[in-house]
Length: 305
Ligand SMILES: Cc1cc2nc3c(=O)[nH]c(=O)nc-3n(C[C@H](O)[C@H](O)[C@H](O)COP(=O)(O)OP(=O)(O)OC[C@H]3O[C@@H](n4cnc5c(N)ncnc54)[C@H](O)[C@@H]3O)c2cc1C
Image (cartoon, rainbow, N blue to C red; front, top):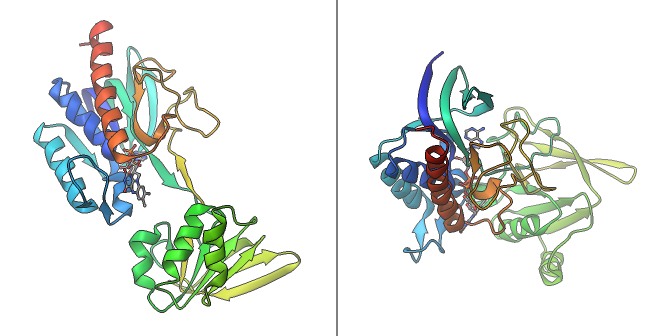
């Protein structure tokens, strides 16, 4: 168990967190970045076509460029560790991550969003063994195989339209009527290798070491469908539960004011985890930068430096 003191902790190293850390270091704040991974949601797609300065760039390269620039300014980067708790202590905060704790004067939460899980038996055990949350990343692995897409919104519809070009057969399992562009739903209806089952509740994902089938419940019927892959496309949720007392909106996003301060003084937030509309890399990065500059001002104004 280790303990260390810094001016500021940035939690999360997606574009918001990396930009926040870069700007915190530009302001000469002693900075620790604690993140499960470096890249965040950018890890889920192959390429980015709308980041200013690059007409199109592989995601891995954009992540590497952001990371190199951030690290050149010298923050401490704790990668592969999840922050579990942020607590007030005296005039600052204690951030816990695994067995380690970090004593800091301010915090920037840049934890973004994670895919919603189905929460059914077999899902957790078979992640990476046929259960996936990223069609763009993992779709090509299922060439010629039978797959299920679970979800009822546009991301599920796009996933099925993508996979029907790769897989031998796609089962689109929707717990409600599909919600999306009628012409795209129509395209699914016309595809010979797609079966849409509405009002289907997935009750388990089955397999010994790899996905072999899904069990669904619809009407009074229970059915087991043989598949090699399950693409969970049920949306994303913000990671906004690290600190008690944070004001959230109805979508569980962190409410911030115009200086990126949350309802807890000294705790700032940036990127997809906040209520700011439009979730994009460019927007998250600029918000991360702004949150660090505002945190610096707050630390000065409140005589914490
Ligand atoms: C498949 C896909 C394709 C996309 N394509 C584009 C695109 O082409 N162009 C575009 O502009 N946007 C795109 N987006 C959206 C864009 O990726 C996000 O808006 C952006 O990444 C948000 O950045 P963020 O830093 O706020 O959060 P995230 O990228 O979600 O990063 C959050 C970070 O916090 C870490 N974290 C979470 N919880 C903890 C914890 N408890 N402790 C420590 N670390 C934690 C995560 O591991 C991650 O590193 C895409 C998103 C997806 C899913």
